[in-house]
Image (cartoon, rainbow, N blue to C red; front, top):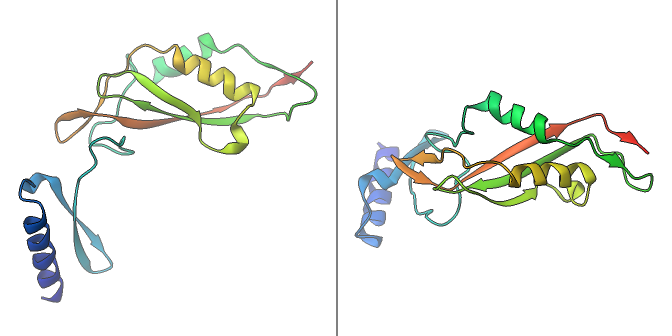
Length: 152
């Protein structure tokens, strides 16, 4: 009963604070025996998880084939750290375009491997956009890359 009262008060507060809020914009989550209602107010920030994630034209197999076909095995200068892994995150917009391509951590910045992967991602065709509540939305997408580079 206590949980129900808390939820009812929270929903009432949300209803009073935003008159244009639709019921579909309010989601409930179970947090340690307490139901919490959260209004979905993100409109300009990309989502991390959506009902239908963005997809590369032709699917995941085609995505990895595209990367393999376009990846030029980098020659790592002797003065640079030998990187075998990089992770790059980018936004797939509601129109399927790619933007804001960047490494996920500072340790991946300015690596030849990271620069190679970023160049490939920027050349990708439009994706099928992600959808949330039936609407196309901007979504973050992350691609890890592991290789065995050579030095010259």
